[in-house]
Image (tube, rainbow, N blue to C red; front, side, top):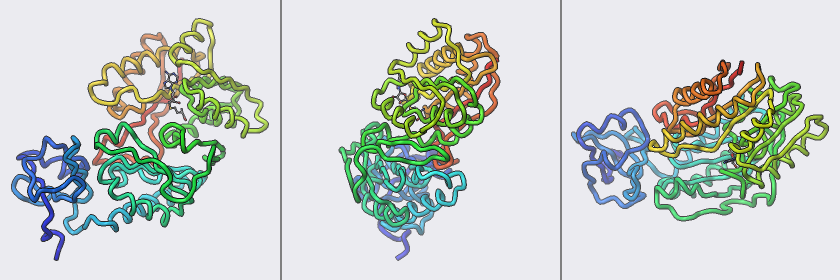
Length: 402
Ligand code: SAH
């Protein structure tokens, strides 16, 4: 029997609400649904039909979530079974293996959710040890084929699941963390990113342990670091500072509010061995610490601002833009004339144009002329799916400050 003849339950869209589905946007919001036929249970595969009855797509339903259907295929012949998940995992892993930008690194994002056709699945590979997050009901129900595919196609030594609380709440998913395959090393794990080595705490570090998305931006900044005094604000485990030191920086000051992150930053510096660079680790609120250093008249050749997400939803955009503006104004005040500001936002709801406006306002208030010499984005293992603009979240500007 062809899949189109299978008696799958259906959701039928309201008139005029089929556009985003036809444009292959992978999220179907409950407000677009007119009615549901065939009494699907949450986690079931459903067909999505236009108001006219025309077949549009197929996905997995969760009626408790605002995103009622996670769309998985726009091909009526494609069946959503274990093999579907295995195929998607294999395709994602293969694309990373073929990516030349990842050839000198053993830490990479293997699966980036919707961008890889796998809504709610994040898989980060740290030297063969994979950290997995399953934050949709669709993904959580497919745990077994996903883990099997990772062990088979990515030759995983271990797979450890970690919760993404913010996302899981939206889908009413219960805690599910711990080892799912093999044994992850206890303590810190060493990875190689381009020419640098870092220690990663995959069990207790932030997110899955390391900010892989900044890999290319660290490399982009490296050539400017020779002889520089670098202020690495929101340093986490100090990765930008390690790259800077490895490329000849004279001084790196790491600021972060997490003591654990700064301890790992110190351990990362020990891996550098004979670097003449001097390091400072400052456990503080970034805003307060920058203000303090400004009052003291300090200046740096390079200031890096990589804060956590300031906006989690559209209603937080205005407040977040003000926070980005304030932060960048403060940061600009610490840059030597002719020095650099590398400034970032990982708030998906703030687009690159709006972020640039915030930095522009900061420049006006700081009374400095600022030239963007590069627009920065997320690394290639975090691809932006064009039908899902929300997958673009990290943006940055590398600026020369006159
Ligand atoms: N640049 C880092 C990633 C930064 S993630 C890298 O490349 O690895 C954001 C960091 O900001 C986290 O380490 C978090 O602990 C820190 N943080 C959050 N709020 C802060 C605050 N108010 N002051 C200082 N650090 C803060």
